[in-house]
Structure formats: C-alpha cells, structure tokens
Image (cartoon, rainbow, N blue to C red; front, side, top):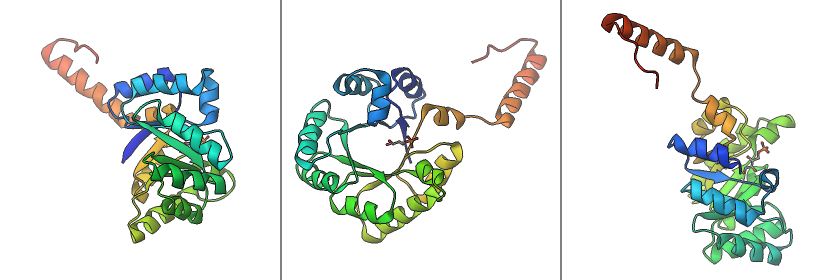
Length: 220
Ligand code: E4P
C-alpha cells in the first residue's frame, strides 16, 4: 500500500519525507488555500520535497476550462496528477486528459457507481472519501471495499486511493480492503508509530543494557 500525505504544508511534508515512507501527496483547494501561496508556486515547492505522485486539483467547473487548467497544472512537474471532481464535466475532462496522456485523480467519490464512471473514463486514481461518509452516518470503508472488488472483477487499472482518512484504524482498514493508496493528514501518519508497549519495551532494553555495562546509551 502506498502512503500519501494529505497536506500542502511544507514543514509537515519535510518531516514525513524524512521518515522515508511517503510515496506521494494529495492536495485540494482547501489545503492549498491554507498555505497562502498561489497553487503553481506551492505545488512546485511540494515537488521539491516528495518524489512521487503529487495531486493538484482544478478549480474550474466546466469541461474545457478544466482541461485547460489540468494541462497547465500538469506542466508544473512530471509527477503531477491532475485532480478533477466527480461531476459530468469532471468525467468528460478526465476522459480527455487521460486520452492525452495526463494522469487524473477523480475526487469527491461517494458511491461505487461514481467510481465505475471514473474507471470508464480512464482515471489513474479514484478517491473515495471515507471520513466524510462516516460523518453523515454511513460506513465509509464499505465504499472502499466495494470499489476494490468491482475494479478487480473487471481488471480496471484505476488505483483506489482511500481519502478523508481520520485515524490509524482507517489506514489499517483501507489496507485490509485492498486500497492501493491511503492518503492521510500528517497527524494520522504520526499516530501510526505509537504503541505504549513499544515505548515500555525500549525503555526496559536500554535500562538492562546500561545496568550490565555500567553506561548510559545515547538516546536516538
Ligand atoms: C484528498 O484527496 C481529499 O481531498 C482529502 O482526503 C479530504 O479529506 P477531509 O475529508 O478530511 O477534508
């Protein structure tokens, strides 16, 4: 399973990248707006930090404008994946951009039927939003499970990216469901490290070692 960071914040990306386990980045207009730089500039800076797929989302809503904007975003860097929303115009733009060799991440997916549309349009990635479905009383993870099954049935090449992940449990369940990618906020990636028995065990190992050799090992 690939791990993507769901942030446009450069400090978070630098920290995550330093761990050597970040395969890519997803952004959306909200995340870009939070950082205060124009999208082209921010995305270029992100590409300097993480060497992997970097999703940059269009803000146009009409097909030809989306295509034009998508082409402009794709020119920023070879790793750019253009993000289009799952609307009629978005799917038309996805089909056109995909045909011209630009990779598209279709976002705001909330049903398996929508995911089928994205695969039919040749999307490189589909992004089902787990947390936002949980928020409105559905089990978001069921959607990830349905899409991975349907794509397997028909050998669709579109990768399933579990998005809107809010907890380590969401990440684990996405992996169990067979999602190709999980995108998560920095906080969730950081939480994946934690277990009290890891801390307790390490503390004991270091104490035992120091007692035996009368020295205090330097903490890492
Ligand atoms: C990623 O591609 C999505 O934009 C993101 O995961 C949405 O997450 P949220 O529901 O926490 O805003």
